Amino acid sequence: MRVKVLGAAAGGAFPQWNCACSNCKQLRQGTFHGKARTQAQIAFSPEGAHWFLLNASPDLRIQIEATPELHPRQGSRDTPIAAIVLTCAELDQVLGLLLLRESQPLHVYCTESVRRILMEDNSMFRVLERIPDQVRWTTIRPGVRFEMSSLAGDSLGLSCDPFVIPSGYPGYAKEKSELHPDEAVLGLVVSSARGGRFAYFPGTPAIRREWREAFNQCDALFLDGTFWSSDELQRVQGFGSTAEQMGHMPLSGPHGSLETLKDLSTPRKVYFHLNNTNPVLDESGKEYAMVREQGWDVAYDGMEFSL
Ligand SMILES: [Zn+2]
Image (tube, rainbow, N blue to C red; front, side, top):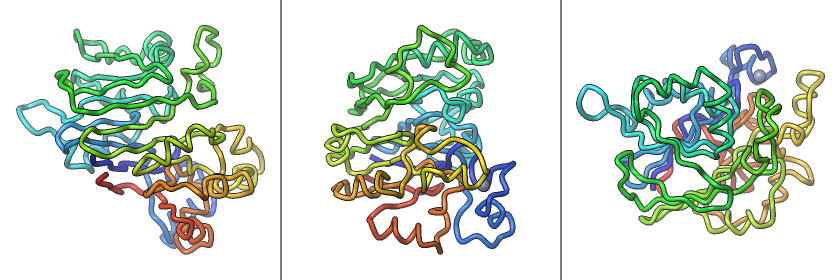
């Protein structure tokens, strides 16, 4: 299986348009020892022909253009993108769907609650229903394995296990009482019958015991790398929520992911969904050195694996 990181940053990207934190400032000045990053986006393929997107970032158009594997291959309209899997309804993870609206048949996997938020409460997403059968929706049920097929419906030997992440719906959707709490945010383990398995947990406030076992059986793990410390945003902005209150487990500290997962045996451990304030983005800094020493990679745009 091939896995490509098209974008590695959290919402707002790096640099973020209205942010003057020391990372963003130095990057603009050309004095930063690290890379700019677009917003979180992963693509994977079991055999290099059919590609799947994990969520749909607001930067998806430029991410597709920067990735030759995702360009049209035949005829006047075409895409190798077989499907998009949505793990939540956050704007940073779904806005890209609106960029894929050019009357292109699409297949989207998501929970029923996420589909309702998009299609019943946000009229703009009706651009995905302009022509008959434009988008095929397949419902994901938390805890229930599902197979992923080509756009034509052919089996590709791909399966996915969705895990419930204890989190909530986006602020814009919280009012709806009929939304099922377990369907708000999912973590995924994707497996290919041809070989290769990876876990995708880009936003989680804690690590559940049963996830460890799943992580240990994976060839790669993409884990929440949003914040280095619990009070990172408060220190940068002078106000705001803690990392945990925002649904993110920080990397550092006694309860951080570095310490919590220090015995993990997954061969490739990757911090993904990096907020622009995170000091780990600075490759000359002690935080970056510490993460690398403990066997973790820091995701960047264009990073690629063969699993
Ligand atoms: Zn910043």
